[in-house]
Image (cartoon, rainbow, N blue to C red; front, side, top):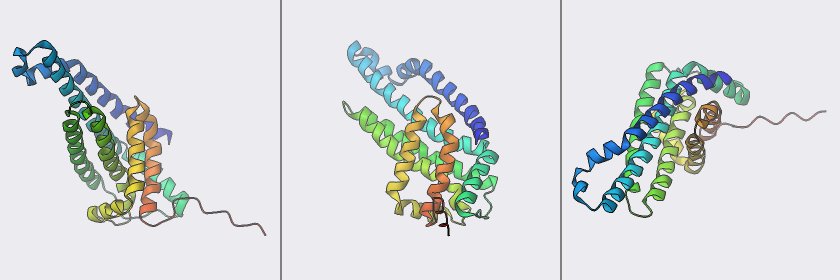
Length: 228
């Protein structure tokens, strides 16, 4: 499982660098986006740009988390495939054998990236609401992003069972509370600087268990046989 840290570290460093770059360039970006506020009183212009900056940065962080998950799964395909297979063998004895090709992996990553982008935009727009917007945007972002992350991480195990996108979505909807609980927990862990690198292998293992549960298969070790 330690090998799973390598792709997570590579992708994580790239995305952290991108967020740092955005942070340094944010003041200039906000001035470019709000030239109409130049004639306002400084306090109101600063307030507008502060709120807008909070929304932009919050949306960027949410998008970075989704992008991190998608890119890490793509880059670390061989590593995370081993983790998933080991969990399947430990819990079920056999590994589902429907191929999860690199093409399908890329397709899933792109589709889920699109969902993540919508989540980031939605959370960013909510964050623009005065007073309570920042908190509401964070909560909505966590819920939406948690759902996307759970879908993203569990897609391998469910696809290997021959389930298409619509079938996977139906199973996840039928287990909404469990799916959100898992996804939001991973999302919150990913918010901690550099924690995503350490958490990613465990998240893949947890997603394998989640996939088994929503597919109606046992997700815990069988009880040992009683001794005679």
